[in-house]
Image 1 (cartoon, rainbow, N blue to C red):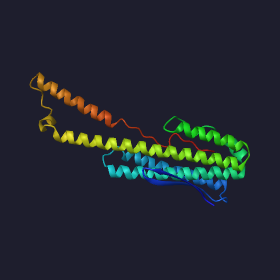
Image 2 (image 1 turned 135 degrees about the vertical axis):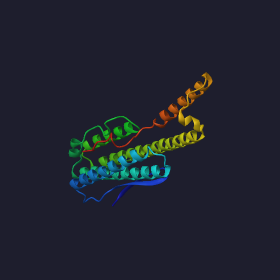
Image 3 (image 1 turned 180 degrees about the vertical axis):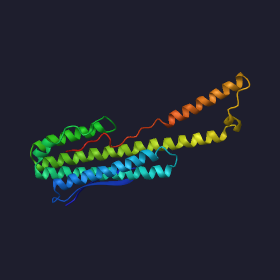
Image 4 (image 1 turned 120 degrees about the vertical axis):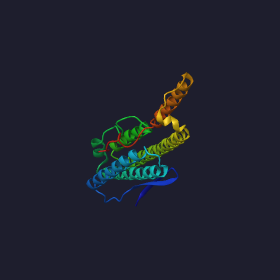
Length: 220
């Protein structure tokens, strides 16, 4: 029987599935490692592409990264379930209490759910552990949803800033491109104002972060 949890990210349905009881801990751990490698590849591509100005390309790369991250969560939850089937107390003893190494969007909630899950495991009850695991899974999905929304907002702002910069450059006097020395104080002030505007536009275009999975560490 498959246990499935759904959440929408940017209008897309997401699901985390806990695999069949026959899944071994070793197989689950291997799946987690493979899923993380896929995330890293998509993350590297996304961080490179999101500096460009093609909104469609950035959106596609962002969605591919989100799906890879969802698959990682799916594999992680499956591994936790496999560990609990083996022995919840043992699983708690091999897992640390910190889920994220650095603070960030939704990290506190995920860390809190993870710590509660480890305490539930220590009871030795499969049912108690499963209930806490489901809550931890929901916290991870909520975190991923918030991250997707934040990334989309930052990308939209960046693309708009790039378009504004292009429009501004096209509207400037062609004579400006040759850096003609100002003939008087009034022209010098106008040129200085334009340079300040250009520098401010560049500064704003760089004011967006690159959140990802770099703060995660394995549940094992």
